[in-house]
Length: 230
Ligand SMILES: Nc1ncnc2c1ncn2[C@@H]1O[C@H](COP(=O)(O)OP(=O)(O)O)[C@@H](O)[C@H]1O
Ligand SMILES: [Mg+2]
Image 1 (cartoon, rainbow, N blue to C red):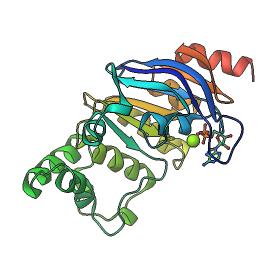
Image 2 (cartoon, helix red, strand yellow; image 1 turned 90 degrees about the vertical axis):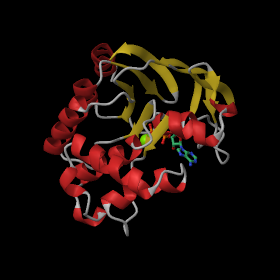
Image 3 (spheres, rainbow, N blue to C red; image 1 turned 180 degrees about the horizontal axis):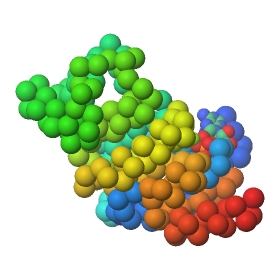
Image 4 (cartoon, rainbow, N blue to C red; image 1 turned 30 degrees about the vertical axis):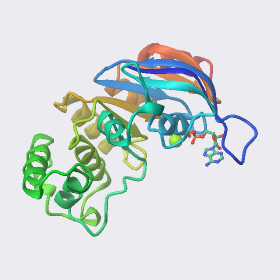
């Protein structure tokens, strides 16, 4: 469980907090949704959870451990992140992108990491993409590759920021199906403004508005309330 208590963040160049007074529990659901329209503070919250931003106040714990105290390798094993820009290395093939962190940062051999990468790509139904460069795959394939790369470290949680932002309606549907069928022990936390997509992939979530947590619970109920109050 990720537990967020009294969390606020104020950007250094800003007077208004981007998020304020957030209290939430993210359970180990298969997929948990963080919803809210553009500018509501979703990415700021994600960056605090991933420790890319240091909260102005409040705490975040993963399984009762304060993330502020976790050593970097331990945190990165507990929590993977796929950003809106996927940050695949353009000069490396998909396969090479996948083995980079396990080899460089976690000391796996190239052989070992290579075997796991090939298995992972096959298991995720993208085994044919290993030798391609990022410029040679579509947006939907790139999203899957970035997730596959993150899963190499078998994190407990993976945070995805707006995974459908570069996808059209048809590819979004395909991606939703793919994500729902994906075999993995990792819990996905999906940050999105795309309510129909969220309803497709997640049963529970939270809803942010203007930096405040407005609702928590079933995604269906959240969407009903959000559209009634719009
Ligand atoms: N680097 C930044 N510096 C100052 N303000 C920012 C920065 N990034 C985001 N904000 C502001 O914080 C608020 C929340 O932004 P963000 O977390 O990106 O929302 P969302 O991801 O829901 O679109 C917005 O008002 C945005 O303008
Ligand atoms: Mg965002």
